[in-house]
Length: 512
Image: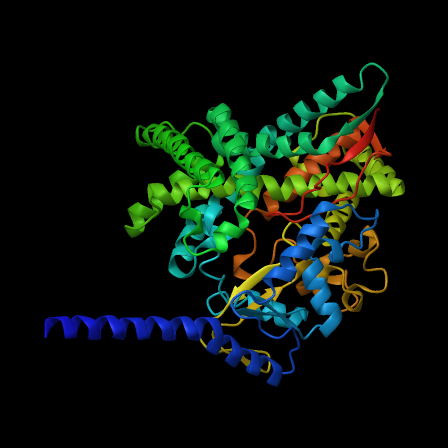
């Protein structure tokens, strides 16, 4: 009798598992595919479990292995599969990310609606690549996000960024000094500026985030950098159920690094918390401001961020803070190498505002031409090339009711290069389009079509910090160097987490 009951239970569980797998792998995707086609969306027919992943992976690997012509028309190289789908089926199209369909939304008004309704259009969870390396504010949702944003906000107030300006300026000067040594003998030298700029961004975030713990911060930056490369190595493993637990060399190293990061950050945070507890406020850096804001929130509300939360936010400082700005600086140098007339105009403006003197924070707001250039670089080479959102229930978007299970992709780089929005010169470098500000830069679409830091309530909290850092770096470089593309330069924008130059940025630097 007992054995029959056990067998019945096992059979029932087996049937339930089979039904769930069948629904996940076939029934639900086919139901969603019918809805998509009824709504006028076009795309490839669903392939069991893999969807479009094989073709996507093949096209990405091909693009990754080769360079492209020197042009700002980079969408087909950066997002080859997405570009292929949109070109083949039109803007109202979709692709299969495994058994999950993703529709493309390129209409600025619909994009605005999505980004301004973050509780209804949330980030997909789980997301293996993101979740393996990024947590904190970027990945959290709902009440947790609201609480964390409230606590972190003071660290990025303009007045606090102003207090960090000397640290930003010092890091930029150190990089320039290294370049000056390289060009000292002849006044000119070919330099791959990318490693220097990448280190500059890490240097700045180490100084501004951790102040007196700067050296420890630099070690954290190096480990966090290694983690990003390990994630790319583990890409297929991350999408395999339980794949991150398989004891591969990359998985083991990633886990080892993650433990090391947590220990180092916990030590720095504990040290700073003890100093704050005894009244030593010390450094006015991101960590110090965050901890004081958190302490105040706990006193007033009884709920704040845990030690683990603070650790994750510190890790996010590095990834988002350094990668975004280093990409912006390096592509600005590449664009100014290609468009010498704008390099000359930018240098003249810097000389007019600062002369040969040290930069000051208040003077940055007078760099109108530099700001126009940075906005155009952010348009052509956005740090995040796409964002994805998901719904947990049937949700209205425009005149559609989107069922649960459909993901929404906003291909930022495609929107930024769309001729219908920006005009026939959409793939050309024309900073003058921003001469009357972002709101008037487009042919149609307005500010909703310019998304380098996304928009809405979840707009990047560090965008002011990134722009000030980039302005400072470019202005200081222009004061001391002119630059042009080297014959060995290879054009290679390729997305990792952001959009770095895969084969570096070989420029010819001339000391002024």
